[in-house]
Image (cartoon, rainbow, N blue to C red; front, side, top):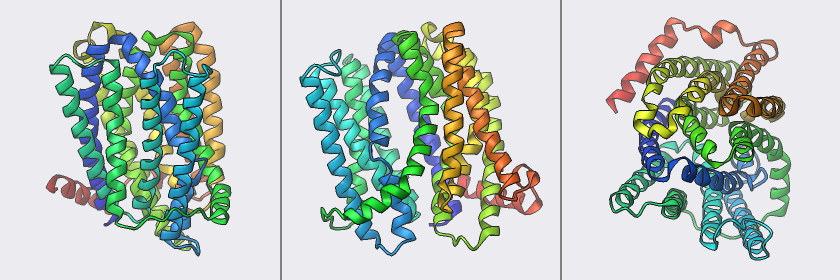
Length: 430
């Protein structure tokens, strides 16, 4: 599957999933209210975060070791899948034991904790399996599975809503469905016979290699989520429910960078590091297309924020201002979201690590200072400042250290304009 076709598939899938997520968020906001939505966001923050980052770097090392080392893809797959299952079991048993001893999650029922463990486990499995598809540039297959699971989730949500059975518990149950669905079909479509074998030497090498990427990715993920943790702790569940609505709307702008980030990572992993000019051309072109499309969507989104109290309900009126503020920051974050693939695929993940650490530190400091003063608007300002730093620092490093040019990163030539037209025709033709 070609790079442009993968981007086109990602783009269409992101649009579809974003629309589905938007519809789900409206239903959930109106049924659960600000308090109920805040409780669900707080609950999911923990289990989804552990599910995405409990692997300690193995998932991020998978594409590199399956493509650019002496190990075969099957060796890496078997060993890493075994490792993932073992880690999931250890974490799940620890959480359930902690609940049983009254050490953690005393405010949640056993049903919610077990549901959280399921979300954690299948999130980690789905995240791991997706890396194999990305490394093989089989992104269209992943997109189809993701889209189907999200359609089924919306369908189930609507049924619960119509039958007046949608509540906090049934909502969380439905939320767990897509990652379970995705895991099952990602395994099925790989069409390999798994062997539970743990290659300790390979795992040790991968942990050493993947730790830098892991920490960098964790820092930037926490940079996107730390404001919600602060609000939960400082302002309570109701304000978290309002702010999470602003976040979910603002993050719709990530539709474009999310569409291209996995595609460019897969393409760069399959390009020789000696072909430096082509790698730079691909990276710079992708950055500027992403930036300008995100800019257009940002402007449209700002005008649409007046509809928030109409669509979500009057209780969510406060979400308007933080949504606009976050839009501005995410425009710059789109640069960083795409740029990291260049350094990750070229074996220089520490560049991304240093940048994300600085960005995360900036966000923490500003959140701690601004939230007590101006509430959720302060959280949005803090996050937008850190997002701006994220994008601008990457631009500086590209120009100063990697010999990119400002024109190459932000201005189009005739050939690139024609390429954009060609991609647009493919998207709309499809």
